[in-house]
Image (cartoon, rainbow, N blue to C red; front, side, top):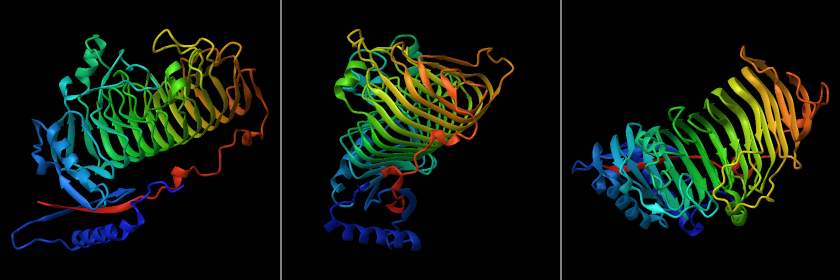
Amino acid sequence: MELWTSARRSKVIGVRAVLVYLVLLCTIGVESRKSLKWDCFEHAAVSCRAHSASVSDFGGVGDGTTVNTKAFQAAIDHLSQFSSKGGSILYVPPGRWLTGSFNLTSYFTLYLDKDAVLLGSQDENEYPLIEPLPSYGRGRDADGARFGSLIFGNNLTDVVITGANGTIDGQGELWWTKFRAGELNYTRPYLIEIMFSTNIQISNLTLIDSPSWNVHPVYCSNVVVQGLTILAPVRSPNTDGINPDSCTNTRIQDCYIVSGDDCVAVKSGWDEYGIAFGMPTKQVVIRRLTCISPTSAVIALGSEMSGGIEDVRAEDITAIDSESGVRIKTAVGRGGYVKDIYVRGMTLKTMKWVFWMTGNYGSHPDNNYDPNAIPVIQNINYRDVVAENVTMAARLEGIAGDPFTGICISNVTIGLARNRKKLQWNCSDVAGITSEVTPKPCDLLSDQGPGKIGACNYPEDNLPIENMEVHTCSSMLVT
């Protein structure tokens, strides 16, 4: 498989020539007799672009009060003509750029300067209403339609959202207040949502105060999310960090997340709607993630997992003051499966639970779910975990008559807090094995004795997304 496919081979030579020319200009600097100044900037991306523009060229004003929704959309619509001519990049200069929702295009890069702040409008009219996701059947907050995300894309190819650690500020506090008061008729907007698309990169940005979820690739393939700082108050509602949803081939790495909900939540549809849509999330790599989430999980699998979740690999995970390490959330009526999950190298400090599996999560979209749709949870592997100041080692609750099976936990040392629970392993309707785990696990996870650490093997092969190459791209603007 070739990920990040370039334009047709006949066009590649011409595009490369343009890019080489841009690099030379950026290297030596150019200023014409008419005093046109050429500003150049570099960034790392899977695809470089031949054409560039600034949102300022389309009437954008970065004063923090002028609404720039039309300017962003006009710029992107103009640049869409270059999708088959080497692609394009839209530069967001220093400033505070107030905007509502806008739509991206294919073969396109949105780049935020290090001093650029994209401010999400708090005006509901700046967010168009869109249909609920077919695998959910309704909005996550309310029945019916939902607000479009601040940055939105649908049916796209080769999209990069990046910057020099520029900021996207969702200004979510007003949205949270309305949500808690029951004053919203529709589901809150996300900061970034990309649907039915392939070859997506979201990187090197700071995202703060999203109205709800921060990054939501859904029905996508070949997705890279890296170098993000995501910040929200730890009691803000549903401010999940990164939620790959019915996606194939996703890589999440080098991210720092402080959240009012799960830092990463892997999803694939909700009850009968997710079962009918039938699109799993699979081939996910999560590495070098740091998370703070006192009321939620570092990595959650579910609870919307009705299309299935499989082959998720997480390593080098750090958590501080979080509720649980890796949590599986499901319920009768979900159907689907969570299988072939591999986690190694977690360092956890101040946790309520290290391991948590829930088979009675509830939270259904409506009363039409199938009570005979029982989720299958199997082949769940954890190894090489060190935790300290932990209240309870594990809470593992399967489904009566349909236990969670194939659980393997090895080489785990859990230091307990002063306010520790008397019962450290609370297990029901689960089956598996353990080796060299402290404190001693429950009897349903039979101790294999020392020297069996290899029992919970982590795959040695690479997923296709791990072979993705990042280039240093040079872009040029006339100012």
